[in-house]
Amino acid sequence: MRNIFVLIVFFFVFVSSSACPYTNQLKLFPVGTYSNMIISVDVEVSKAFARDIGKKYNLKIADSMKFGEGFFLDIRLSVYDLDQNLISSKVIDSTYSVGRSYVKELSENYEKAVKLILKEYPTIELFEVKYLSFCDFQKDCNYLNVQHDSLTKITSLNYQKKKYNLAVFKDKKNYYLNDSYLAYPVPYFAISSIRVYETKKIKLIIAHLGTEENLSVLANLPRKEYKNEEIDYSFIKTFVYQEPVNHHGKGLDVFFSIVK
Image (cartoon, rainbow, N blue to C red; front, side, top):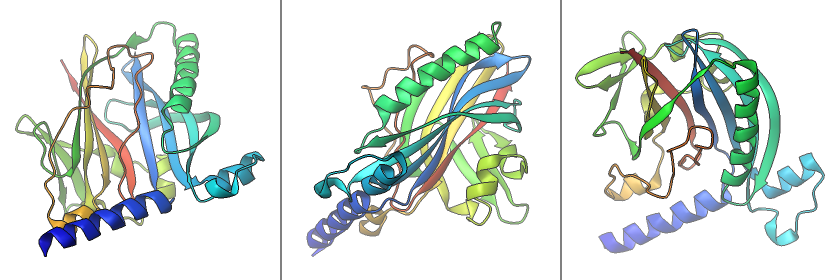
């Protein structure tokens, strides 16, 4: 009986992830530090039906593809302080992708944005990416865990037995939170991915927090932290990847920094 239930859940996960366009994420790809500020390429990713992309960009979409997947990508150049309080942000480009992967379009636009950053901040100290893993939307991972205090309304990440409060959820200047998250209960966030960036003076810990809504949880299927060996993070000027997302999911990158 359990096997039948698991198969039914997998079926609905597949159908839902294929048919439902309503997901939204904010990805931060920090490039380096400049005068104790984090210079980042931010990408707002919105999943959509292919027909919606065709309508916006005046594309001819085959009838068989109209309800297929696609993505809108808004590319920003953003500047943060070391606690992820937003200092400035501007849209530098917008693009789209039709299909299940947007990595190609993301890579092309990220590399353009990096060139712009190097021109605007010629003395920037570039990050090195030291670590990347995926936690499959759990609250407790090998590297980090996320906690939300319902009394103080403070969300924090615990790293090496120390708590780091996330200032971003209190930042009224943050364009993304104001647009998308004020009405969404933060306690439902879990960790999708974990990254570590370093310069000579700063270690930056980034977690992607996403909503936990996942039909596989109903079947009590195991979830575990894993690494994707196909993702090359050896070179900061080209390092991007596509973040996992749950059915009807929302997600955003959050970070804290440690001064060495």
